[in-house]
Length: 164
Image 1 (cartoon, one colour):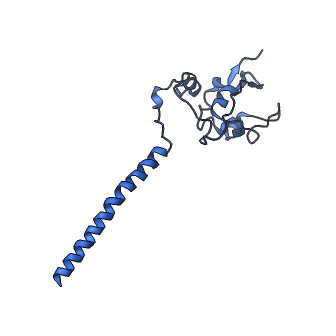
Image 2: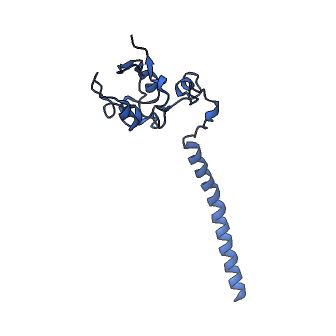
């Protein structure tokens, strides 16, 4: 009886090892194929090497112009690339501060128009009642500035057009 048990265990072990040896190369090949077909993660750039603005914050536009960063229009590679628009919008400001210049060019290098229009900004002159209070509350420019873009404390970045 002991002979029969040892032969059965030997045969079971042999079958198990045979299956394992035939499965491992297939599993390894499938895993390797999945890794190769997955989109490659680009390396992050240390913020210390990027140029700074007059307040010491990262100057993303300068970084873009110098080719240090290359933002993607979309995470979906099948989406068409949004055209860059070279159009400045001037917001007249009451009081002594210079008027605000909104440059579409650097914004459209990063974002598609649908990020802001028509949800955040209505595309009609005078239709957007923009105030610093609303921006500070996270409306209009405050959706990004002070959150992921330069802070609101750097006034001269926006208030840049002297009154005539």
